[in-house]
Image 1 (cartoon, one colour):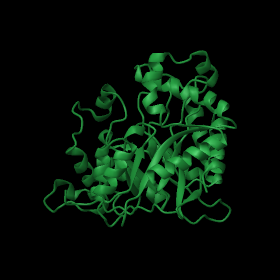
Image 2 (cartoon, helix red, strand yellow):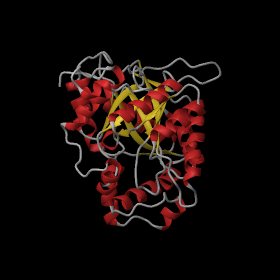
Image 3 (tube, rainbow, N blue to C red):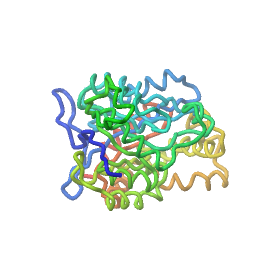
Image 4 (cartoon, rainbow, N blue to C red):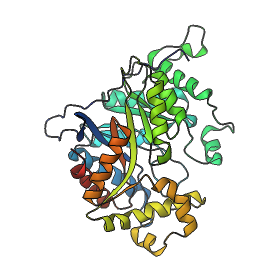
Length: 364
């Protein structure tokens, strides 16, 4: 691979505008580490999709006031308990409802979209909200094979060789980099051409980590999906990194599931629905996101505990002291450039309270 993606990628702390809080960050070895948010718009058993999406807008306003650096929206399909299926639409809504935070996708699953469409969508967002838009790209479809077929209108998945080519096409639509003899040379992405949205690669394994390093792009690792792969992926990214027009040195963000409350016992109670949801999903029985009361009435079986354990091993669940200690341990372990917090609870009030505790408990 001889080409690089030349998208501008502003990843450092931003200057707050008047009347807003400064970006939340902690100091680790005298380096400021920003904290950010990933939201999935959970749909509770007693709520509607509209209520879930509006809760995400309310959450975004609250975490901006708390000083979080960026706010990303996920892409999931055919999941009754997750309303975050169209990140480009929600990014525009969140950006319009906030003032300072960067807003982006965590992520856009490239197998589901034509690169030209992605260039136009994020070019539109960049034109409306210049300097605030992130395009986080994943290579998995983010759903089952049948739904992936419906999204892509073809059965064959992207291979490892296809993914870099899709990335390079996306770049070419933005910077006009198609060679003279390429049929797409005649296409002008409007909006899209000349856009300055930030591009990240996302992953839960070493593959995207290596691609991000070779292309000199920032990398976001999904520790909330695959905690055991955290260090192998980060090592692969840093070892493979080549300076580019985008970055002089590696920039790795780690996403972690956090459920914080006033006590360890309360946090465990609020985290039970997440574990029940994961168990049902792994069993092929996704549903609405359960309430704490529903989870308490349906304790996990030993078999379900075994299924959930690999993912749950990476959760941070607890009161302020526990959250402070485990965040410090995570930063020490990963040397992350940034931490992205994902908090899945059906109640937006509980989510806001959790993010406040993380803000106050973040190691200084």
